[in-house]
Image 1: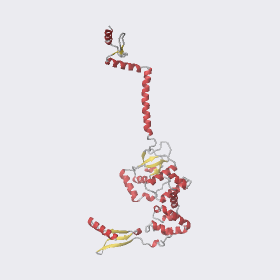
Image 2: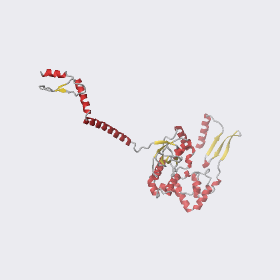
Image 3: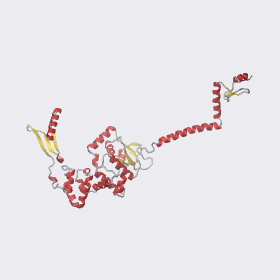
Image 4: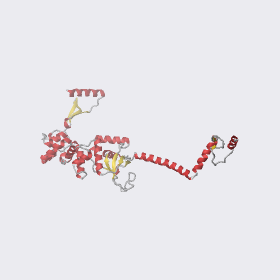
Length: 364
C-alpha cells in the first residue's frame, strides 16, 4: 500500500516557484526516498531563490559581496605599498631647471671632447636615458612640469646631473628628471655622493663645493661636513686648502682642475711663509701653462729652480724636406713632446713601413 502511495506522490506536479521537497518521507518506510535528480535540482534552485528573498538571505549575500570587495581592496593596497618610495621620472623643459647654488662643476666640464661625446650620445638616444634629479622651487598647488608658473620663472633646482642637464639644454631636448622635495643639506649630500660615483670631481672642484657649504653655514665645521658626506677629514681639509688659495696662484695653472690633493700642503705652507713671493711668482708664471706642465708650474710657485720659465722656447718647428721640397714638419710641443706632420698621402703599406721605422728608431 505504502509503495503505491509513494508512486502516486511522485507523479504529482508542484507549481513553479514553490519549494519542492528533495525527499518524501512516508509512514512505514525504512528511510527517506530521494526524488529523481531533475526534480531535486529544481527543488535546490527554488529553495535558494526563496532564501535570498528573505532578509537574512539578502544580508548574507551582501556580506559575501562585501567580503570579496574588501579582499580586493586590501590586495591593491599591498601592491601600491610596493611603490610607496618609488620616484617617477618626468620629461621636463630644461629651461625650467636651474643649477644648484652648490653646483660643483667647473665650466671646463661643459666643453671639450668628453662633453661633445656626451652630447652626441644624448642626441642619438633622443635625450638622457639616465635621469637627473631635481627638487621643486615652488610649493603652490597645481604647479608642475605640465603647468609652469605664468611668469616663466624656473621651477626646479638640480640635485645632481648638471652635465646631462646642460647637454639637453644646448641640444634643445627635454630632460628626464626625478623630482624630490628635499632640504639643502640633503641636496648637498646627494650631489656630493652622486658625483663621486660618476665623473670624479677634481680636488679644487671638491674644495670649492665644501668652501661654499661652510661659508654659507650649511655645516658648522670641517668635521661635521666630513661626517655628513662620509669623507675622510684629511681629504676634506686638503680640498679646502686648494680652494682657499689666492686666485693668482690658481690662475697660474692651465686649469684649476690640474691642482692635486698632494699639492695642498706644500702650496699652503709656501703661502703662509712667503705670501708676497708666491704671488709674485704666480704672476710671472701666468700665461706660461701652454709651455709648462702642471708640475713645472708647481715647482715655479715653490721657487724650485724655474727662475726663467719665460725663456723656455714655445713651439719650434723644422721642415721635412725631400728633393728640396717641404713634405711635412717636425716640431717640439709642450712638455717636450715631438710632433711629426706629413703633407704627403701614404698608402697602407707605406704607413706600415714608416711605423716600423719609427718603432725601430725609438727602440734604440
